[in-house]
Image (tube, rainbow, N blue to C red; front, side):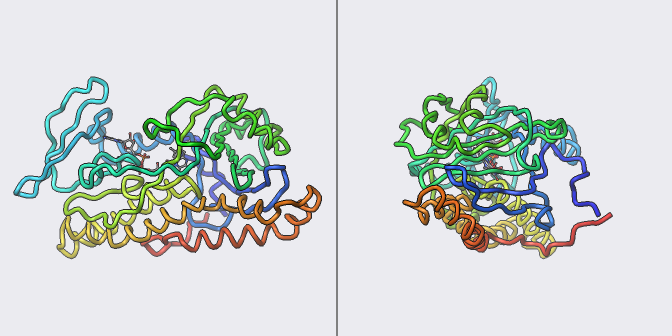
Length: 374
Ligand SMILES: Cc1cc2nc3c(=O)[nH]c(=O)nc-3n(C[C@H](O)[C@H](O)[C@H](O)COP(=O)(O)OP(=O)(O)OC[C@H]3O[C@@H](n4cnc5c(N)ncnc54)[C@H](O)[C@@H]3O)c2cc1C
């Protein structure tokens, strides 16, 4: 049977097999199989963002044609004429030079968290700071953690550390291209919302040191951070769900439609499910003759309310909440008593938190077909 492990993986990605949870003092709480290993019809992949982008670009060119994908252009503004046609303004990203207007009758904006199309439609609402900042880095490690395909998390109520492999090529060499993130409480950063701000190791050294009983592929969280060429600090801002994705001939998709806090691996998942729902809605609207407006209304009906619930659920830190709840319930216990508590209750508590979170997740709009076997 083909469980996917032998297929060529896009963008050198890892076929993620499991997620494991530890307390900040290194006590095992629980682990669970994910993706194909859990019997899901689709794999869970972990990839380097730049390699993933290159894969998408190549695939778009292959499917649509070389000249159909235009890069290095920033959307600036759009207007709608009396005939219903949309006129879009772009500028070249490098030269900041205005480009000739582009006309269309259907605009799907997948321009991310700080969507300029959403700002054109609804104005720029001020996002709220959540009180948390994520620090991220990449490093290479000699050796693999667990089976080389596992996501590992450790932490407590205040902070958590996550690390996972993102290169299948390195895994095959017995090495670990490690993507790590450390989320912790921080005062308002001031300035603009950014996830490209450089941070210093000293900003997080003490907190990572306190997690030193945890070790993944032989390295503690601090040792991983020390091996990273650069560390990015990303202050987490929150936005309320939208009331509709239906703006006549314009709609939003992905983070532009439902900006998610980055827990539970839902950001990419929900964007993909939006695209699926939009495709189904388009096909149905073309067959039934309700046109672009019918398509966008159906898409909004399918996805707006359910993704709004994911936005709300992720405010409670998604599946990462396991670490918070265990810490709350073991507060004041000595290490050995805490170890005993986790071995007796960890798996049950993990299941409760995860099942509650999963129950709030939307389902695919298409009936799932069984995966092919060979
Ligand atoms: C550091 C980090 C780590 C993350 N880790 C995970 C994870 O492990 N798992 C997960 O599921 N999600 C993760 N996410 C969230 C995930 O990346 C997003 O939810 C997902 O990429 C949303 O896809 P999208 O296509 O809607 O937006 P994006 O991937 O943000 O794509 C938006 C695109 O629009 C372009 N764009 C923006 N403005 C304009 C404009 N004016 N004109 C033209 N183009 C424009 C951008 O350049 C970008 O290419 C992470 C996010 C960050 C920032």
